[in-house]
Amino acid sequence: MMGLFNLRGISGQIAALVVVSIAALHLIITAGFLLHRPDQAEPPPDRGHGTLVTAVQLLGAAPASERPRLSADIARAFPQLGIEILPPGPMPAADEAGGFNPHGLQRRLGHDYRIIALASDSGRKLSIGLPDGMMISANILPDRPRPPFLGGPWMMTLLFAVISVTLLGLWAARALTAPLSSFARAAESFSLNGGAAPLPERGPEEIRSVARALNRMRERISGLIDDRTKMLAAISHDLRTPITRMRLRSEFIEDETHRGRMLDDLDQMRSMLESVLSFLRNGNRLEAMTLADIASTLQLITDQFADIGRKVAYDGPAHAMATVRPDDLHRAVTNLVENAVRFGAEAVIRLRVAADHLTIDVEDDGPGISDALKQNMLQPFVRGDEARNMDETAGFGLGLSITNAIATAHGGTLSLHDRQPHGLVVRIRLPVRQQSERCAA
Image (cartoon, one colour):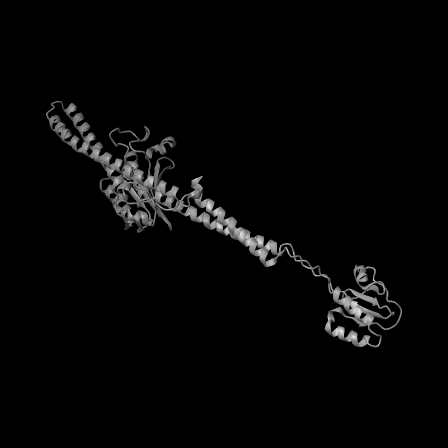
């Protein structure tokens, strides 16, 4: 219950929003009530009947000789009544379809006066007979239209209240969710190399608590990774000495077959240690971002493999600038080309550049990888199926993992696709411009 009164928490802020919205709604309705005062009933409109009754009664009470002057004065004072003295003659014909019921005027004037509704092009017109028989004509003002329902004061007040409360709710909802959005962006840019800033500890108390907990978890994860790297580095350093001694002792083996197998096993152990350490270092030590010519880097890789007799071709523009980590990208593409020429006769490096991203495809004509293993191939120490795993000493399943880690560190992706009629296409998709958080890393 006390949480509802804690304005530092989400529940307290939502409760405060509800209270403020209700108070604002009441204030708006009260202001509309005070302005329009619906409790004070307006007098019913008489369409000028009171003035007409008074004028007719004055004419009826005045002498016949004074009536022309008096009617002229009334016409000047109240031209909308249109009072005129009719010449003597027969009674005018009544308008039965006029729709006007003169009984209300008849009651106010009395039985000494006769009222007849006349037909008129300009509107409703009456013929009134005075007690002495003189006839006068007068106009009946048209009914004042009632204000439309949507234009009434209460409806306008209600619409204003709904719009105001809705805008207040949208503003408050944005204020409450803004910390969550920044929290999600910071969590998305989280990395183990320590380059990303800690999660912002702001907003309601619950969000600040989660941010503090995740920051502590980040520190613990980084510490565990550092400890793992240091432990494996120490093990690798300690193993190099006995491996070296075993290699020296292997030279004294007289049987050449056994000596060759022993030296191959020792070389494989050393290569495995170097590959594992290289994979760990790549995950923790990232190169700084810089503007580089991607096309030149890919052409350099193509020339390097061509120099050692491999069939590698480049297909793409002569120059393409992007913000990358040049050495890491060189290493990633080199790993892919090594796999391509290892399992196929030739490889092609293709570069395609768009407005906001670039795509690097490394194609080979080898046996390819089955669909069931494509996703697992990006995991460390996972090698392909038997078709691509002809030589057990060819690798340790870290090449694609390292390349995937480099692509992810660039904010990009790595995916595997089939090549027709056979072979594999490894695709790296990278953004041309890096976000400021990644550049800082």
